Image 1: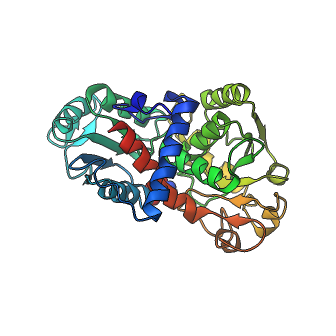
Image 2: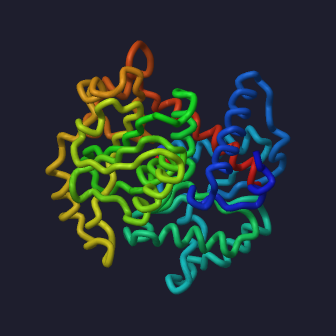
Length: 352
Ligand code: CP
């Protein structure tokens, strides 16, 4: 376990870390979770430290798991609404007296606190794919304290950590686990890609047998897919892409069906800035819903996963979401949500 190498690091993308470093984070999360269950408290680990959290988008789980996590570690998480400060923007996008350049915001906050966490994707960057991630990198370039990614338009690295932590808890490890990340229908086309991209990156990094399932036209970013192929090869796992929902689920141990946007929603040159074209692709695939019958195709001990919030009745039925115990396959969505707290406490302890 090499914990020293993590001190002071930003946590912006899982691809910035080695498998050994990610496993260290999971091990520390396991310790923190186990000890908290035994009422051993950790309020000396980040005593008197401050985490600034800037949310350009809404949140239930991310905000509350970071806030609760900082409280449990003895520090304080400070919520910043971009519309109530001078909205941080990249150089060249400033509007007098309503925005402030990222480089200035970063250098002010690093004089006062110990880490900056940011969520930004979609509308705040006009669906210009990669622009939000670039802004987080710009914060990190200027801040002398760690910058944490609470979800941008490319990665959701804390959600992905909680996901593999949950898989490890359930199956005891990763080798031989068939992990299916699948697209599912939603009436809303404004769905970022970060969750599926982070999920398949971590799953291939950990050497699982990973299937990415989606209808034609729902492709994820090509550079993410190339990275997954490399990870699968290096870590003795596998990676395949299929376009048939039922075929993907057969024999799976992990079933993670979730909507993400189609490429035309993004600004050119990646997309066509067209909600209509995106909607047209979505509307052809309303049958991509995770039902009990779909779950019956999986391994008998399979788990249903979702980062939440889920679109009940569209992405998944109530019967699947709410089968959180009993014989056979189960839904682990609330374990996943809880595990956000434990993995984030681990990363904050290690980097701050
Ligand atoms: N899964 C997740 O990031 O949830 P929130 O949008 O509620 O933070």
